[in-house]
Length: 275
Image 1: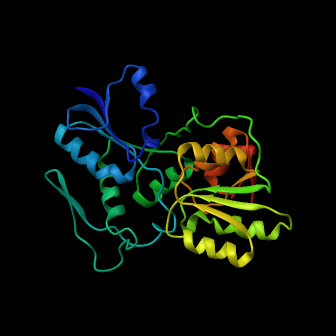
Image 2 (image 1 turned 90 degrees about the vertical axis):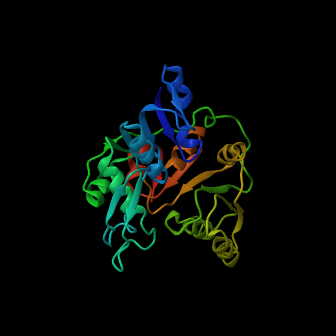
């Protein structure tokens, strides 16, 4: 029997596994073998982990990275109940969370039945209490210190304002482009990420005459190199559950300008300039 069945949506949320295994824990990421604990490292894996825990009769720990304040500030949860190892949801005709229909309702149901709910920041802890009526434990996560560390490299010329994040409205990359247009000195903007706002951001840069490179695909090595070459990493998000980008930039020795939101303050303190 394994100690933990680890449900991770990506390699980042499995970053701790080598160290945990070195400390003697047996951890499975695949398969249906029994384990003493199911750990869902994201809300997107909550239902899969819940079904596993139901079948094996083991406790479940659920890690919730964020609950977007605006998306969860209105609406009512759909009724949810279990039928064997499956969740059944009765959609409301009106007043539900239409943007992610059913997701928050199922997540709330599972969180209420987990042994523990873990969150990365004080802000997410508050939101879980407000939105789900549940207490959670603040368990801050890490960055990949094997990739992100200071190393000598030539900075870009002209200087680069770098943003690394998804291309979505709340990430606010438009602010980086608008700032570049107002500086009055030659700079370039580099945006690395993915999402629906890539084309509108390109149009905005063109309309403002800003030299802007938008990358929707980048290797791990490309991302580290981009941080090191940038003059400034700009982190303009309107909302984050954790806020990894400023942490990674600081780790490689690049200056950071970040939006003044609670998770940025919580994790980078005086190491960034806030706006």
